[in-house]
Length: 367
Image (cartoon, rainbow, N blue to C red; front, side, top):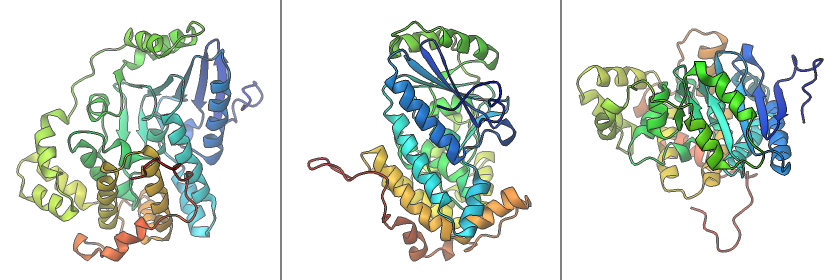
């Protein structure tokens, strides 16, 4: 388990501790908004192994150091550099990150995560599968990948397709940030706790009685919960369901174009700025995910699609515009939805030669 001694804690990317019956995992790259590195993914895996095997640990708590956010995602600059260099590092990162996501989704002990501040991409992946997902008035939750020539991953084609509405489609295609109430509405968080009560909540969790179960943790968290400030999406739910119900991006954009009022106008502007290829790949992944029965299969589809990401123009151009040159002016190729070919989209849906998970046993279906 990563050391937390005084001599190494400052440099450690992941701080792992145990306080009585609580195992703590603290992401410790605050200057980088706690963006995930491969080492951090491996640290979390080791910590979860140790906490699961230790009968004295009743629950796990995941937080981010600093006051700006839990985690802004994977280290996109490292993926960009590795992809440019032809390194295996990006694929290794995604492989281990996605298997960690699945692991969290099946973790046998209460997994409490404080989604305070910025929570994006890979930060969502270590949060959304938790058993107790806490948001605050500072939460800014987003899956902005279509704006960098990528697609919402870490199982987004699973957790954004479990709703009986089109909120997940809206979140994935637009990349618009969600506050606390909206994250709860979409089903990506459970409980609102004001940020000024977090120290008291964490202190209470560190004093969990030995042998505490999920019901005990739920009751403790409820003691600190409040009704969140009103969100932006609920008043627009009917419009979102109408506009995003189509199975092609062209139909969605046309419906938005025919809409009226500020909401439709903003949507058209937002969608027009995204990579056309990314929008098409994302919608196809979502519709595939809606018909898929297992989280692991959605992760498998997404992992296979990352191979095409590393060969694409739009990913490198999107990261250049957002992270490297920061001119916010990506030149997508193709530049128009109408020019995206079926072959370009199909390249993202070729099965991986080295899948993430073992094939299902005989009698177990794989959708």
